Image 1 (spheres, rainbow, N blue to C red):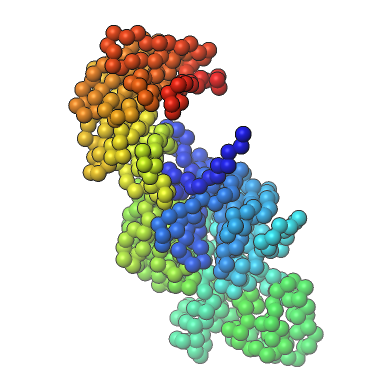
Image 2: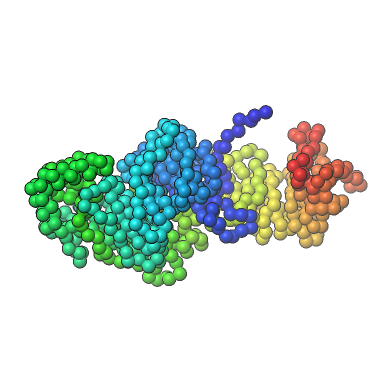
Length: 613
């Protein structure tokens, strides 16, 4: 028999990977991934374990892509402009090419070295991947299935430590990467004649973010304020042709400028006019390397004489990089470190996430602080800014928090968090709209099954892990815990209005509520018994004894007032709660029983054991 079930959506977490039960330490496979906005800025792609959630911020709904990675996802990248291609890389370096709109896997492959960063070029023709100490640039494949869609364009070397961050220039002609060796390196994507890669130094800690300034903004600043010499007030001589920023883990941001001497420009133009062979050589290099194009051709033939009419790769030839300013984010605190950064080149805004749960929004190149806010008590593992620079997305892997913040109005667009140490039990409401979940952290969360979002976290009343949750009626949810209590919660006022306790200290493992919602039962670990309470009065009406092991499962008969209990002693007992002197009927199993359930008509009862029977 085949059931046509399909995954509809994930509930319980909107970001990150649930940690092991009872563990407060993040493993290498549960440190979370990056968060990506779509090109319109209205949807957010958030990895959860080995799945990807797509959250619609306008309609307040979410869906889960019908693709599944082999293990927890480490990095995702979405092609710009059209959002056609999604690349997913897991912690074991296995990658998938996915048609985002159709949710179809086009190709699977594996990187042989750890991938810590991945980013598409602004024009969408290539994507760069950190490959250990190297950077690989691949040609973007199409959206149709091919035998070998992955074509390696070039591998870039020069860094001593593993690459941790990278960025593209606005015209997709330059590539900037930083690593654990506290250095950054600038390459041209295609071969450019007479260009030598530059290494940018000056940091004492590994680099967390490297960012190119938009070419149009750089040239507009130079032409508007310094038309004559192009000197923007910097101590470096020459005409400004490029600018970038590097951010290190210790909270230092350096502004780097690339400047070109006027004399060198003029001499090179004279040489190009006098020597036709050299211009032909430039054309040949651009042609065979696949770069340049019309801009490079006009430059070599003398049709363009300014750096604004050529791409940045040709503009920085024979230019020099230098550090013009240095700023410190951690001037008031030495305990916090920079964990993540995101930069909007169009709006010149930099978002920085710190290890203490703070984030800062800065305007570049002045590095003036626009906004600072504390979002969480745990580390902000990733930050992202949408194309319009209105919404900021933050992910905290340890607490599985996903926050969308509108910094202009200072309001939350979305705020979701999962259970701190994992989910242990759940239950549907009678109308099927609400799902209640109980976690190892002792909290009860209510989820809307239609949207997939958690709309309320009930005030924490349990002091230990919750082992069972049940709905007495659509407005009352009951929770049993290892702290020895069963609590009733009002879903109108979202408060605990009744607490049920045993006459002796115990830990409850299971719970059941009768069909009328008037009687609640809970099975304990030690002593091995079942406690029965009245939901209305809260009094302990009966105690059922007879099991020789912890009571792991309870179930009420759908028609009669019978209760079935499953225990680790290998027996299932059926009790008649409305006859005080009745003897329970016992059924033997060949192994420890862990669960029990009645058929909807009540004619059969089934139990599960640890042997799989």
